[in-house]
Every structure is written in C-alpha cells, then in structure tokens.
Image (cartoon, rainbow, N blue to C red; front, side):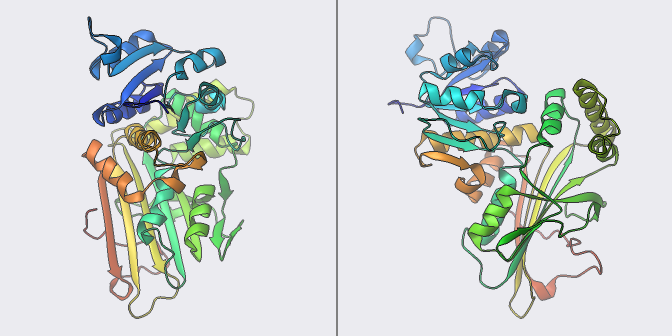
Length: 393
C-alpha cells in the first residue's frame, strides 16, 4: 500500500450506503475518492466531507470526486488506480458481479465489498486483501456467535439461534439486489448446523416467532447462511440456527409468489416493482427498523448454566451497512487483516464492530445480557419467547 495517509476509493460513494461509509472514513481521517456515474452528486458528497476546495493544492485535499461507470472495466480500473483500498458500495451489486473486485486487483488495490455480488468466484490473480459480505446481513449477523462466546469455543453443548427482522420500504436497487440474491447459494433453506455438519431439511418452514424487541409475532423462515455454519464450525457449537423474519405479510406473500412461479412470466422490472410496492405496504404508517437478535444457550440446562443474548436494532439499514463496510475498509487500510479473500464475519472483531455502530449511529441500540438459565421464564411451545433483559454493550 502507499505511504502516508491511506486513500480509500468509495464506489457508489454518494448513495445511501456509500455516503454513510464515506462519513465514517472521513471522521477516521482517511483520504477519500468518491465515485459514481453522477459527477455532480460525487462532488456534492466530497464537498460535504471537506474537499475539494477552490485554490487548495491537490495533495492537501482529503476528499476528491471522480466520475466512474461501474459497468466499464477500464473506467473502474482507472478509478481504483492509486487507491490503497476500493470499497464497493454501488448497486445493483449482483449485476456488477465481479467487475469491481477484478478492477481493484488489476489496479493493485485491496478490496472490500458490503455484499458479494461475485458469489463464490475465485480470487483474481494478484489480489492482495479482499473482505466480502461486509454489511448488515451477511456481515454483522455472522459476528453474533463470536460476540456471545468471546471468540472462544464454549464448554459443553451449546446452541446458537439468531433472527434478522426488517421493516422498511425497499429502493428499486435494493429490491433488485434482493431478488437476484435469491438465486445465489449463500446458505441452505430449512437447515441447521448439528454436531459438525449442515443438516438440510432439519427445521419446519415459515412459522410465527416471538422475537425480543418486536412487540408482536413475526413470520420467521429458517435459512442457514454459510457465514453462520462457518462460525459454528470455528467455535465448535453443537447446534446453530438462523431465521429471516418478516414483520408483515405483503412482502412475504410477494416473494413466495415469485418463488412458486406464479409470476414467472413477469419481467424483472415488474418483479422489482412488486417487491418495492409490497415492502411499502408492510411499512406504511410504521417506523422502519432493522433488528438482529441472537441467543447462545446450553442444550441441557443445569445448575450454573447461563443464556447469553445480543440484540442490535437500528432505523436505517443502509447506514448500518455503510458503517460496517467502512470499518472493514479501515481495518484493511491499517494492515490489520492478512492478504487473501475473507468473509467479514470471519475477520472483523465483534465488539469493535458494535462499538463503531454506536459511535457513528447513536440511535442504534446494542444490548448484551447474561442470565442464569433457571431464572428465565419459559413459554410452552415457543423456544424464542424470551424476555428482553436490560443491559448495554
């Protein structure tokens, strides 16, 4: 990497995710290059972060703006040239696929992606350090087991159960990425991690769950992401489960319809419009939120057993994703992550990540609790109905 203050290029730096990442990185003192197809928008973002200013020499500018077309390989490489790290926050990520990652490698820059539009594609030749899936989910979601175990394998048989609940209107780009991601193999539906392996079909389908922090039941669907299976293996957990939950029925109904093929003849634009409309109906008149909740508990409760829980709740999922992407880019720029391609959940420090969220997004709630198992009231037939205890990370 170059000497002096590292330069981080933020692709899509004036969008909802990229702008949040740029604000974090500027606050941390990095030099920034803000890029996107709209040069004027990039310049406005750069000006709001302290540069460029009229008459200021180029070497003194902390933030610069450049136009870049993320669908043009040569343009991407020119943008990445001279950067220590390229942070990819542009969308739709699944349409851009591996282009930004290849451009970073060709330009000699490290790479961070808040998603992983390239999927399981091998690392490009000459790649230095790449951190993928550095967002909210996947990303922060995969850090929860390590947070509850302090990164060490727990003694005795333990089960981790996690939920991600979202309420809010999709943007068109967000809806497009969501739909395209359904065809990627980032996990296994209805599976759980059990005694060292993924067990497909182990869990029933969608069902009502009570999740702490949500005042009413939500519809939860079991889906075991690769990042959780990897964490369970690394931490030697006996069992691990994950649920994606829906607060409302419109979005879930729409996704089920598209999965079943009932809307299979509809073009992609029409499907995206359906998802945007459904998310708006679920969120109408309500306060948006993104909530991650995890619990680590013994399989066989006994004397001295404890249950540890973590809850993270924020109002702006794009901003939360931007903060986590910025943290990953900062860690790479500071040489704290070794060369090679890594999933963010495997290399970011859980407590440091939550601290960064609280620092940059003060309205984010982060609670971590520990309760003796024999003191926790049980609701028959609903293992997720656990009261939200007080406690702040």
